[in-house]
Image 1 (tube, one colour):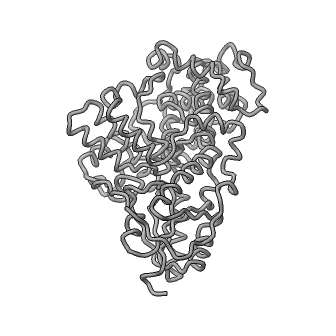
Image 2 (cartoon, helix red, strand yellow):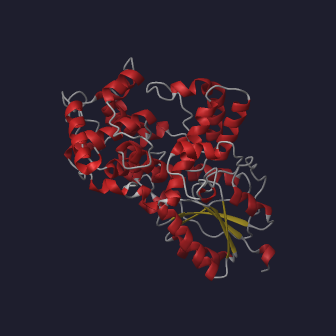
Image 3 (cartoon, one colour):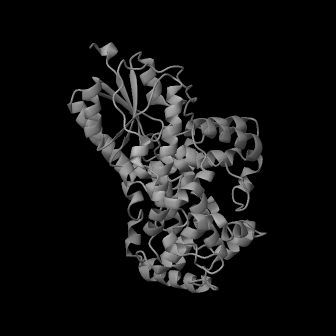
Length: 465
């Protein structure tokens, strides 16, 4: 077997798309057989219930897309390096390609795979795909990394990440395909239990769906985006976080659409572009400070007297705090697998400040129930709300959920929808024994004034008051 007939293994991860996929594009251009493979490996084994289930939906859709090019998707379960080595032995492949990722456990896996395969004499090629700009290519004037978002935005807003790449028209197939496992065997939705049928109604899966969502957003929602994105009861956002996290659409495709709208003078375009860059900023920080996803980004917050998991945190998880907007948001996430971004800030502030519970408790819960879970975005958002993360704010931020609800849900439609949701009771575990109308306390488990004062006292005693 000579080099021109040896297959290339294309290792998919968070890039379940054909278009604007640099690793796939490079492999397709070589004129050699390409074998797409997804590994249920040591990283994905640690994902929560909703992300594991949702990636399975994405893989099924992407497998169909690959078949349209005369290709197929190979599924294998096991430790990444060992599994790739086995595939190389089976297929005779001498090259493995993938698109880079930036969170600590993903980097550790990838660096180990690259070192091991290189020692084996296998060619490894990696590409930029998941973010607009590589974290190490965005630096301050002093040559360091950015720790605050606004300067980061100013540093990249005029940069050109290049145009999106078109999808390959064909993908050369090997003469013999290796054996594949099946999604059914993996049982990725097992831990979703009876909630699976409810959340499935709200999932928007696959590359075609993502591209259609982007087009609809630009055409119909962009003009009012700066206002509507904060209104809890309005469908004012792109909804693309779900698709971006699995790579069913690229950040660069979203950026290109936003830039075209900006050049046309469309209102809302710059706000949309800033949100895309916020996502980049999360991965920038995750790469430069790997502790972002596991421990306090500001180490001085190690002294803050947060509790671990507790009974009040469990009431928070179940949407039973007695605060309407908090409980509505916690029920929305259980039904849809997503939560309005404004509501995410409110529930995070209430858990970490009023309930004095460590942000990791909430961060881990979101990692279990969000279908748009992104490890960098999720952790940065939680740390921002908790106060332990990157933030230029000179004060201790404590959101008042009731004030926020009056401002961003003035008619109470968001609260009514989710507090009265029949789907919530369809989705929750039977072991919760929840009965509509009798499951929430008449008064908040921690009052807003009481909780605020306790959090401020703890903050002052920590030495920063």
